[in-house]
Image (cartoon, rainbow, N blue to C red; front, side, top):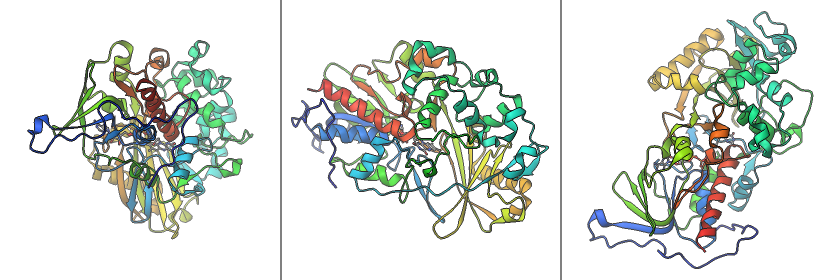
Length: 491
Ligand SMILES: Cc1cc2nc3c(=O)[nH]c(=O)nc-3n(C[C@H](O)[C@H](O)[C@H](O)COP(=O)(O)OP(=O)(O)OC[C@H]3O[C@@H](n4cnc5c(N)ncnc54)[C@H](O)[C@@H]3O)c2cc1C
């Protein structure tokens, strides 16, 4: 498949290759220690960021080698083929403003489809199972005032959408907004959130911990999402719960999001090298040597790290990062998400409160429900942050048991009607080692300006280097940015 990558304004198409030329393979009789391949740019990581960087560089005539630690393409875009069909364990929803992701899908002939509607969620809070329709008046609802009429899963959006002081998304980085670089819990309390509301929204909020995560970084994300969400008086919506009914186009990739990253890899002239985990990057005046665990060496003029800092901090980089950038790479927090995918053999919820999904204040957090094309019921327990890290200390089978047993306790009707298909912890089961980067309070001021700063011949991409975009669009944009930085240098 050929790409029809468009050239960005201000950049001219260059067809001359760099000094090293493309893929010089030293003869096979050479001793292994001296064998190497080379390209203009070595890209580390075959997630959306690395692949988009590689496509942009290739389109400008530069040769690229992409190294990937895992045995599949896509990183945090991963689709499992489960008995109920292709299932995304990572990146899934494509927002209306995802210009790059949509453009890639269009150019690579990857179909985008409308997301299936969300099924309603009951609440299991303070020891009682309550239908969503009965929540506002339930005895187990211990929130106060206007909070009472808001579903627990929607409290996050209720507070952060209605109390967002940022005039626009770009302003998050401006000095006058530094006052919001405080713990989310502190910010929410100042807006009137009760202790019970804080406890309930800490289940849904996608930070390591609500008492330490930066309010400013989260307000940025909510501000960006507002762009795709009609402003309405409906307080009962989840932060990521906008849909086509808002008049904006939300999409998913037909057959699973991994089909998009596979199409991107297929459009590269040089095959992605799977099972090549990078352990060292050595930079000099002449270029870059990238060494992988099996002893292979890849040489380039430049290198792009398109891996999360959870992975980069394990690589020996010389010369080493310095100052605030070194601190950001070593110590920045990356949240976890743990997903447990199950099939419900019967719609057991019809025998209790009726809502198929479930929000809980237990260790299994939330259970989302959907149906596949054949009408099979798919449940997935989605556990975030600290709660997910706690479960990582258990063997995978014990996590599966815990989820099924807890569900049976909460909803006795589910007993014997739920089969676990897959357990996936992003911190434990992926080379990325995380779900997403999060800023702790105070870290926006400390680190935001150095997260993407090039270091010698090393350029930084990946979701954690984002400024205003979210999720997959952030990753794709970061790859494009790193590629442009190199094109400017490589003239
Ligand atoms: C549970 C979950 C749900 C999500 N839902 C959405 C959603 O609905 N919408 C949305 O827009 N976004 C969503 N996201 C976020 C989105 O998936 C990510 O932001 C994006 O995929 C990150 O891409 P990346 O290229 O920056 O990093 P990654 O995808 O992590 O790519 C990095 C790659 O580097 C590889 N690697 C790591 N270490 C090394 C090494 N030493 N050597 C070589 N290779 C290495 C990894 O294996 C990986 O393939 C979700 C993420 C998760 C986890």
